Image 1 (cartoon, rainbow, N blue to C red):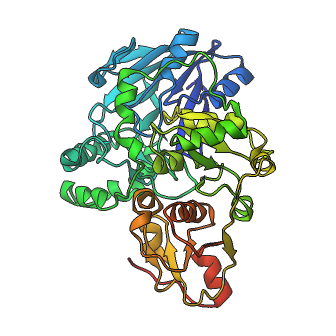
Image 2 (tube, rainbow, N blue to C red; image 1 turned 30 degrees about the vertical axis):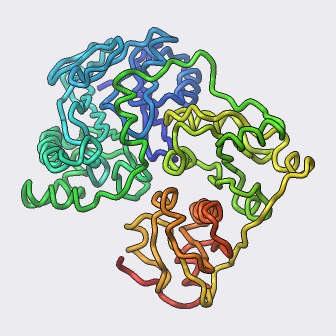
Image 3 (tube, one colour; image 1 turned 120 degrees about the vertical axis):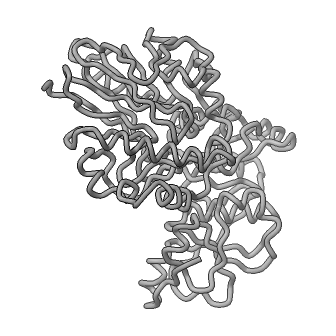
Length: 453
């Protein structure tokens, strides 16, 4: 068997893995790459490879595909499901179709479930299966969610997902499993460090491959579905029509203070991407805190309307290209620019600032504790008596909460500061942020977190 040169390209913020496969002749296959192709380009350049093929396992709901960008700029051949009815040039594949990669072959396996048109791609070395790109079908320890197509299709797709996983389980045990969704993905991957596996390991350890029957599978899968960012509802359709090809990389044009004031007066929103302590010390009133980190993109997409003009405030050491690319890969093209000179320029021209109190883990007194983590995180352990509202629900619901002194918390502080900024924007006062999570609180107080919802 050929010694495969496969490079996982992990996007920690999305919880996803794309893959670059060296085909051994100066060409490469890319699987499930996003519009942010920087990591793919870097990996290809290091190996002197040209991206000859770009395969998409499904119509992605959590990022814009980079396949069309590659086709337009490099002549890359796009491989995707014929059942996806994409409205741009591609090679439409059906169950059992094969593509000669030049020594290796790629066989399409129809595996609907996560989406209607989902394909897995079985990589063949001669007649020997070497690995399978499973996209949103078989994941490490799980399978991807089935509720993104339409609410009325969730159970039917879960039953198709059951069949898809059973089909994959018939592959030889030694076949590698290369999923797209992994830990941190809102497409329902469980926590854990492992992002690849084998068929044999999944048969032995994946709970969804060990359930008694199809009904038990449906109950287990649909019972674990958490919330997801609202852009999941429309991004797959953008990918079906074809993401816009970028002529130039996305950027953040500098805007002076008068220009920013004018934009804010016309309804633009200020997004402050600085770290939590800097935002806490001083920020423009009404700014929404979304700290720049790997998970910046999904939280931007969760908390902000995609059509709203956005102005960014960043710290001196933060990369504007990173901000622009993270927004672009989820289809957010509303970044009007950034405040030139940052907060210092705003203050120098007489701009008002405010701050948010930070609270160290410890006894929390009589203040309301508001935990804004996901439901599963909250159920796993929280401060006794804490109220729970997921951060994603606060964008629209902050104004409905009663006004009272509140300490907001999450796991580390970033989501809590986002929540605090939304509360302050909605008119709440006396809002503080806990600089830690339930574990830090427990260590400081000697008390055990409460479990359950």
